[in-house]
Each structure stands twice: as structure tokens, then as C-alpha cells.
Image (cartoon, rainbow, N blue to C red; front, side, top):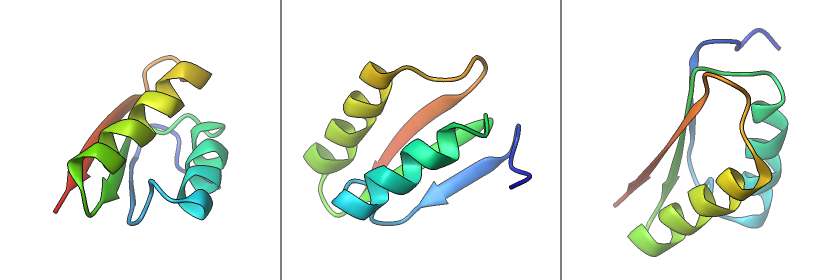
Length: 66
């Protein structure tokens, strides 16, 4: 997967499958991962969980909802 330094958008990224995909994507050191969900609490909760796992250097996470 050639996503190093690129932006990845995960629709439904706060769910069970979305979180598993996010963890796999983060192993490839993307520049930005956008986690989307219907509700703010879900998106921010997912980002918090992923931050607790640790991120590759130079990768940032963004929560989006709506």
C-alpha cells in the first residue's frame, strides 16, 4: 500500500471494522488520517483510542462528523 505521506479518509472509521482498518492504515505512515462518524463523540472517541495506541512520526489524526 503506497499511502506514506498521503491523506486517508475513513468513512465510518469509528466502528469496529473502521478502527481495525485505521490501525492497519497507520502502519503505513500516512500524512493524515481522517476518521469520520455520524456523531462527534464517536469520531473524537476513535481518534482518542488511536492516539493512545501511538502514531507514526509525522502522522496526524482528524475527527470529522455529521
